[in-house]
Length: 458
Image (cartoon, rainbow, N blue to C red; front, side, top):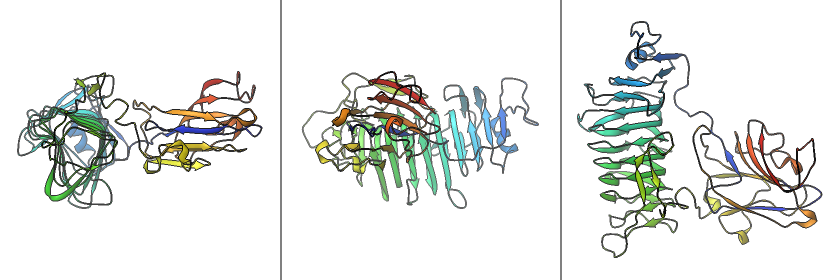
């Protein structure tokens, strides 16, 4: 956002919602480095001897063992259990199209991951109840640590746990659904303490699991933009391993027991909790909406969630029904811009208390000013997302110019030209929606008038 030299406009953005005038687009997810392709398609004409394509996933894995490769799995049902080696990326046609069905497998899990790996766009089901593990198991590697990404997976109808993580593994679960699973629960984390989260779950639904939706026995676990509902226990924290669950922007409601935590959960705000069952599950923040503890009077919080269904996303979710307390709250409101994950550039500043703690002023009322504020945690541009924000443009001495933009770019420090460039001039690999308040004319800027919106591609 920028000011034209000939006129001045204060650009202020009030972050009523978790949003700012610019947004960072993510690079491809980390995990295994994608390399040579191995194709799997059991619909006919396949061979586990020579491939092109392979009939089973495990045959492709065995053929690629020791290499950093991508294994692409066609739509269909694959009745097998699979052990994925380090450095592999396993990609299906979609969590509703490619299913690894372990109903007849003899392993303790349908999918076991040994080392750095990515699993994307695949469903995992049918795991037996052999101990606790059923769906996906990520054990501690023999040496070092493992970095695993589960991206757009649906783990369901397993007799044991949906996802089990242990030891020195680091697992990220994004844009996924875990549940329903019939036995021990949804996600179990028993990870070593380290400098970062052992398990990080975001934009995910954990629903309909017979045990706990999430149980943490040790290590640090991050829950961000997650719905945990319809489980035996929503969130359970073990005692002996000193686990720490960080909960933010999430719904934990409509479980038989929503929260059973000792030590307490660490709330980072903007949560909807049906009932605090511990009786003190967390030191809740003002931005949380929490039902009463068992020893207190009050009304339980009804999250007003629709059934688990295809609501247009990449996996199944619970739609927020009219009147849900999560509307306009979860994944939205922030109480203090200074503590939120944003990168401020050039003239952008939060040093304007008159606008409130959840706001940023991108440019002051001075000549030749340009500023930007980027969310520093990337989003996936190939995934649906919704961002709501309000802004005001004030201080129009000299006529006021030039406007502001909402931009997706590949760097949190991106900043373009001042004036008619609206802070995005000369940026590359970006897309922006502009709110333009000054006519800089044609053809240089393509402005039809002094009051218009536009879409800019570069």
